[in-house]
Image (tube, rainbow, N blue to C red):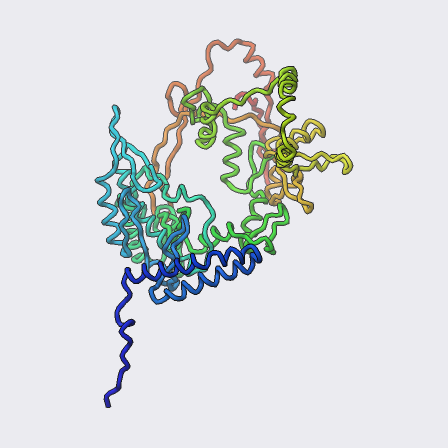
Length: 573
């Protein structure tokens, strides 16, 4: 039996061309212009009815051209491409849209191997700046601007861009797969990569291969993992795991491999959960139930609240004072600023003045002070009185509206939200800045932290005011170390030491390379203490003899009876 197929009308057999589309748009515009007086009347009578009618006309127009697949153009700074929902187990393979952001190049690919080869071709297009000392190479990747005089480093840098672009493509689709919101951070530094001054070297035992491409290095390490017997043979590790998946995750901590990146700000992470936490921290709902009891900060999840609470608990004690810190990095930061002295501690010199900074961040904050315009000094009382008398006639012609504008400007001052907890409630002092409250607490109430403690910190209270944080959370072991070992302020450290570094043994599966540090004296001799100068007088030796202490050393038996004894002076030791 032959089935009869109804033929479509002739007007639907052929697609509508561009000329017919233009005619349709012109007819719609003429119709709208003819109805314009009627719409204006409706607007004057009833604004709500006018808006409803306009939206209805727009909806009818869009429905009439639906067969032409008409779309509304994207907004300003909005990506026209939407993330694609990919199965989680195929997130790093399917529907990847890798973009080459080299200058004047907009090439895209979905295959990583082809994309890598394309990016390598841009190495020959690096911008070269000729100098007297040598050539300087500049990366032309979008918002990168990396400069170096080492061409091999530039090769590693450009290869890293290809690897980073793949992570960005994975993170772009992850927004749809994991149902995440957009990142709210600034995207200016999305393509600024970590420094790669040294070559990628494999530190697996009995392997010394080096690589210039980061992806080749990761592929090589994966081969070691696939052939290993469930143990990490990275130099000095020797960890064992019951499953190979756990071993793979562990080895990433040695190689530095990352699996995903934030498409907006460019930050890359070792797991999907890290990206989820990164985006959830920036999109916290005001009615969240996860609030920190110490500072009142809202968190998106219970896990993020626990991670935030760790910042309030000090787990590391300083051996030079009674300061404690929540992390090793914070403790190192404290020692670097409070206890280290000398030019070695301030290694970053200002090119415009003798100032030397502890960190590069401090130096970058200091340099703009040389180019910043000086503020005008406030006028004296006499000059201000003269200006007021001269402007009396001109002020008479001002209207009441201008006076009201001035009043509005005066009200725009920052609100005072830092309250003193030591003042009585009736005469409580409130300040607009925390630094002013700190000055008030020190000068008026004599508030002072113990030696070595961090600066004054303030936390928000239930009434919305910020007050001084008077408590410090510590582990019990840390508190005992501070109480038992505290002996008042100690001298600062001098980090100007000369030393030699000698390798003692090679790395094995369970032990890393061993080195020996040998201090030098001013004459360059190893292992010897500098001899005292001949300028010392006999009075110095007399003072040393006066300060000497006699120590009695006794040998006893099992019952505690003294068998023999010997007296030694402390200056003889």
